Amino acid sequence: MLSALFDELLRRHGDRVAVSDGETTLTYRELADAVRSARLPIPAVERPRVGLCAGNSTAYVVRYLALLHAGCVPFLIDRATGPQDLDAIVADCGLDLLLHEENVTTFTPHQRPDLHADTEVCRFTSGSTGRPSCIEFSGHAVHRAAVNWVDGTKLTGDDRIACFATLANGLAFNTSLLAAFLVGAQLHLGRGLPTAGRVARMLDGCGATRLVGFPALYESLVRRGQRSLGALRLAISSAAPLSPEVKAAFTELTGVPVHNYYGAAEAGPLTFATEPLTDPGLGRPLPGVSLRAGTPGEPAPIEVRSESMGTRYLNAPGLLESRLTDDGHYRTGDLGYLDGGSLVLTGRTSHMVNVGGRKVDAVEVASVLRDAPGVEDAVVLEVADRHGAPALGAVLAGSPDATEVRRYAATRLAPHQVPALVRTVPLIPRGSTGKPATAQLRRMFETTS
Image 1 (cartoon, one colour):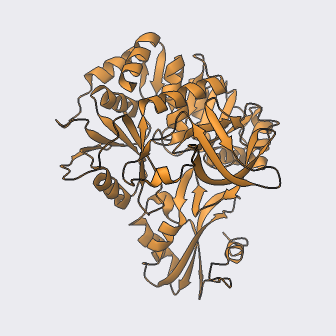
Image 2 (image 1 turned 90 degrees about the vertical axis):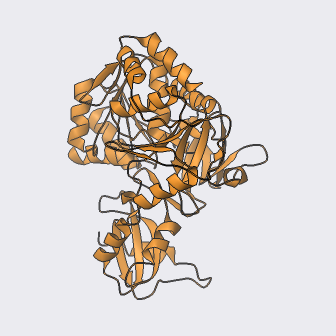
Image 3 (image 1 turned 120 degrees about the horizontal axis):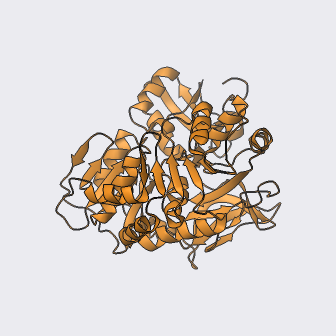
């Protein structure tokens, strides 16, 4: 379905600009030619499973579309994925081929789980078992995510999207790839760290009307005091709630409102704040979305159902299904309530934390840290850095050297999983039930950074 859909869209929009990365710009017609002429070492097997692990670029888009065109199932892997997780993905999902930015690795799987008959794309989320969970998506689900985003956010062919989220992440994949192509918009991909200067130059250079990025991007622009953002009309933030202070400061500086967005890897885009200056939370449900939460003063677990739901976890049979209610709503693990129809987040029901736009399994990271030299016990939690932004913190018991522990963790975890802030104590403070005294642990990060 997706291959035929993209083929039709590339023909329809012809000589309009399709995608750019600051170095290479392709029209829809040129993109179609590049896809047809792409030479990839596709294995001679049925429905080849191909991992795509690279940063944003026009070449990424060409490879993704070429894989679909060749009848492959693309597995979109975050470029920041650590070597241990990458090995787990290859083994658990039975990949035939792994495409990095500069090299290609082939595999000969012996045993591997069967793909669902409707699966056309796979993406990943942090696994509660300590391994990345591979979400299978049908072409219908990917299409509906894009259609509902277009309808719910009023995206048009006149828009020029500056996207600084990686295409493997749901924020970019669901809002800035197929969605842009559906209406013939321009997609401009940010490369490298989204520093304030780099973001401002790109927006000015491409005349972007929409900016898509994580909260850290907006925090950087506010710290710089950035005022001029060219033709920008709309900014979108996701993955972690943008603080009201940063949101207000950004709008005051630039005159551009920040529209909050809420989504789940397993369910796609879920809400959008169409009136960001007055919306109390992350917006109302998008078309095709059913959302349940608590009420003001009584937050409750958030449950969602959407037309863009994933089918299952390929490498964790039954796990996704176990998180569904009897009527098909997905239990997100978030807590919140509805205020005038807008979703307000208040916390988490699980040990997953959201730092820098990526979900991190605190239990998994703590387990790795306990194996580091000198560490007898460890607790990992979300704390605030010196700018007040969410950061990953670790409290270590024993006699460890914090620098050595971080160096050890970097050999076993992805960069975003390595705690940015570390404190050491003789013993982890615990309550009467034996659980870590979280409030006391958080206070350790309040006075120093």
